[in-house]
Image: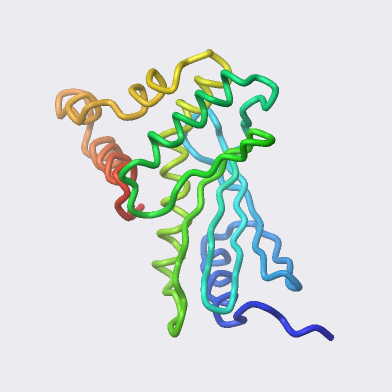
Length: 192
């Protein structure tokens, strides 16, 4: 029997976190992969997650169900530029774009060399990925379905602070949510 290529201890931490959240997931034991879907607040509605457990790292992938049309060169160029603009300045994770088929994803990484991740580390990686798609998802759909340029889409997603947060328009819960999204967009760790 082939020896596993991932840490059982790290896998148990991820599994415990997912079970505590009562999320439905599949675990591909031979590969060390967790798979599940998560609903988000954007036009995208949900993203597919793959958590890849290795011996010394944990990689969280969020995969967007909306792809750019690989046959539309202009759309592919606009999406590439949009995602590059979105990535600029991010501290935790990055958007990825498959230039062959138009797939869009977000990747977050936890270094586990010599240490185990905490449940908080796992939570932050999963939630950061969701926050990025909530922040930029409407821009992705605007390029794919409404022919927005990369600059128009990024401007829509990264409104100035005074437009995102206004005490006159938001109650306290909305204010906290807007602030969390802004921090997430700037690459901070978002605690939800």
